Image (tube, rainbow, N blue to C red; front, side, top):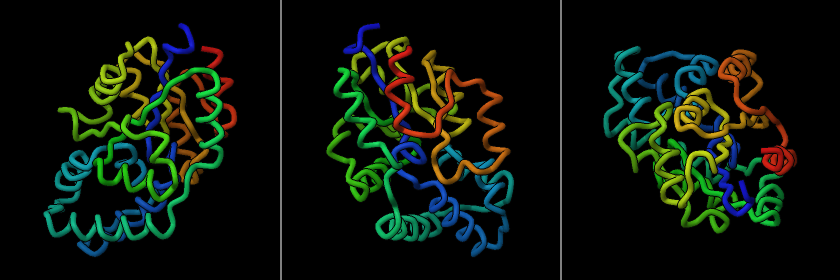
Length: 225
């Protein structure tokens, strides 16, 4: 596969931006206000990498919690306020993108989040200009991760086939989606949320093509493919 045909598809949360601890803290607090107690490890296990529609369905089915419009609006306001105050890019991501560009390798982002959240995350961390307009959201497809729809949509829009694509993911749902799409997938474990042994075990069980925890290593892994 020639370098110019390669496409790196990045997840956003936990891969480009170190957002997962913030997101889980806000979600756990929102559940607690509604009388549902769940710890962070349980929240990661159930919700990491899932689309909002999947989170809403799981909350209803498992906890009997109706995440109505008022609940979701409060959640969104709390989350976006925390993002504006505290969100940071994953260390080394700018250098990793520059290395890909130097080798003629393209990239895009395909995230389970809604477009408003993706764009805010990329904007406050100074990454938006490096991805716009190649930003794809689960809201664009019928099924979110772990279904392959989003990654297949991104590849099609970018003019690539599945065999051209390398997906960078931090969640079991994302790795499952990439594998279902027939794409190479690297598990990134450099986010500050990946300290749970159960999380690492869940990633390992899915047998990604590589696992790495420093963005500086990305170009070397891509070059091997």
